[in-house]
Image (cartoon, rainbow, N blue to C red; front, side):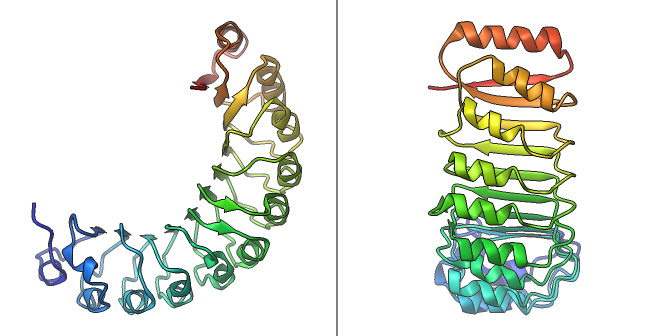
Length: 289
């Protein structure tokens, strides 16, 4: 299928369109021109649009400004890849129903602009490939996000991880129910800080790091997160005791994913223990290769 142009899309017979994905060079040829006119052609189109994804293209300031000038009053989901200096312009977007924001593509300082997030309706925030700093993390926790329920960092670079997680733990998000840290360098200092976070509604916790070991579990169970039901720890666990420790802390756990070593005797014993003692638990062991 030949990639469409902006004119072809804007003239399309889709007055009820609710979801749109633009991928450079695949479904949408004009993105390669890096022109703000691409987005200006969408002005006045698709008033019912609820979800927009712009992928495989880093948006500059002019393009982001053009995007924010479009009136999509029902927009709820936005996934884009802005350049760092384009993020302040993004904050001008008049999308009163925005609930899900995903920012991608190697931001070196973009988090520092998030203190000005204008969408108090935001429930989910995902940040991919960012460079995390204490000042950026502090800006994030200063943002007015009373409805935030899910926070996800994927493959970001944490230069001062202990300080960053200490700041994150100060965040006042009473509705936070899902915390996902993928690729974080899980130091003991960082984990000690993180478990002090006061998020009583937290029910899903996902940590994926090759640095996570049995000792991290001993720190994690110190957290005051009484409602955890889904826990993923992809690291390197070698002892059956981590399962017992985890289940004593969270007896209502429904799903547990653990990264484990290559000792099949321990792994089989862990699976048997789970089946015998906690038959309702869905245990998934992720083997180290």
